[in-house]
Image (cartoon, rainbow, N blue to C red):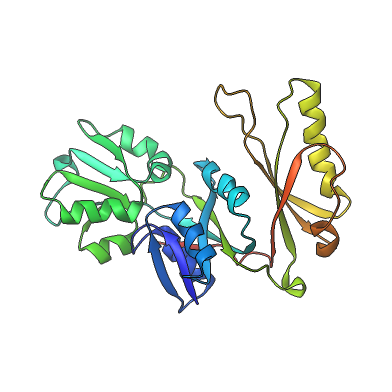
Length: 277
């Protein structure tokens, strides 16, 4: 099995890929779009994508990409993430002038980073990518927020571990493939849908229609999230997940009215939460 992930070796997405399939080979990609492209083109068998974090919230771009590419979800992984402040060996926290990391990681460590003085916070494409920039650069005052494994991969020192704002820092990843999971293995189904651009009661009614779309089949709701796109007057895709008694029935349930919906995949229930350093 070859699994694509966004970022450099040592990224949390790579840890999620290896949690899903220990012993699998991994395929680093520059962007989330590249992960979808690699799966669609058959360069890899699977791709892994972060979807939401208990501190930073949803990663909306990946919901949008699920709609654009229509590649099914076949699995999920939840990781308990510990962020570390990394720098070149010999550096101290007081030496740091610039800290690099992915925007989600920076948001998850906002409280800690705000307490640092005279430090510029710079968002980059990946946590491990930020660690690589520190290792490859010549700036002695550079640091990164990344994992312990990234420190090992790039030969960096850990100045402080566990700098996330909350200890229960859990990220949920989904696994995509070109083909759906076998029906007998699927116990959870995802639907992505978008609401029409209507104010007031009409929008509320559509939310209720979205809920009722799968209510007849549902055992328990996992997520229902609607996000307004800033100032544009329309709604982003909303994610809705349920555990179904009848996955086949939920998968092909006709949508008579209300939001536009896309079946996003069925999967076995996720693995128990694991911790990644």
